[in-house]
Image 1: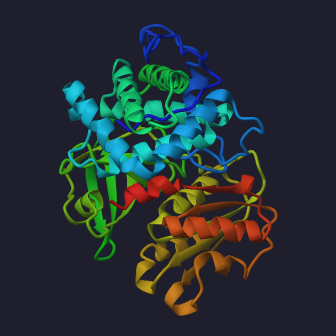
Image 2 (image 1 turned 30 degrees about the vertical axis):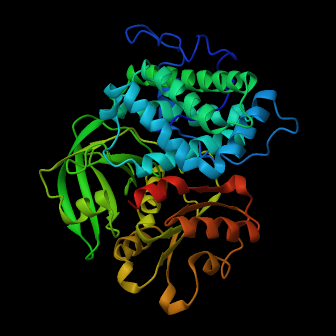
Image 3 (image 1 turned 45 degrees about the vertical axis):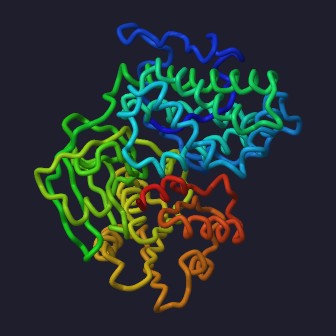
Length: 436
């Protein structure tokens, strides 16, 4: 169960329909829910590209006049920021002492979980008034929480312990009015997550079991892992999932799908083992055919808009070439002759582990160009290399790779005239978590 996030929602009333963090009853799984059917399925698959990601809401200007609750919440965040580690440690101590039945939902090592809580709170403080922006983010978060075993009755416990932790450390700004603002905020946001999870329960499992059917070690630290899920797994090219190994229970990491949906239902992932990376190391050096993994639901909005004729400018660094390859296959399957320009970046030629595959695709499709960019040879970073070509004003941009490359890539693309609304990328926060 990820840390709670805090923001009001356009989907719920200010009081969230309950008392002290008491959620409304979730819809009966046997009865139709609002948005079920094709509309709900499309929402689950997130078909429309967005400029940012599902884990971190898009950056939009905050309203000129902040709401009273937003002002109070932000004041609290400013006060506790210097002691954030103490706040989160106190929160989890309270949660596990008061509600020991929730401890099995969390991983044994809590360092990453603490980071997620802090990020969630900071995100809420920054975007608390952008209700339309956060609703989709929170719905996706609620659906994703199902794989942890989170139930509607768990949310009040989390909320009460969060308030207790804030009360302990926000001694200067805390008041009855501030507490009421946090109660309203958390109650509303938790209700969005609860409703989204209940809706998703009627059409998808909480997780999928997936057997490893192929393990291809491309380099000493990069493997292509292919799995067969136990049930149909609907997703879109460019999306990602969370993955848990049997060797590190309750430790989930994000990996992008390395192909467009296949007729045989198999799913492939490109995994690079990183120093002290528990999950990545296990997948590269330990996993073998026959091992069984768990998959969470698909997520992400770095997908192709097939109603557009714009070209695709794709920057893939390292194993970030995996979703780029999936996007290329997706364009090919739709039969569109739109131009696709791929820049494949790596530190050394050895790191271009999938260049042969990409070049074969380019030979098969005249609308596709693939340009390898090797740092040690060109003495040029991947985003900078894009400036040597173009113009790109008629292209939608897609970035996938290490967090630093994503950040510098966004800046470089904006400098050459591509607006932020046409730049799509993986979540930087998820990428950081995936390196563990």
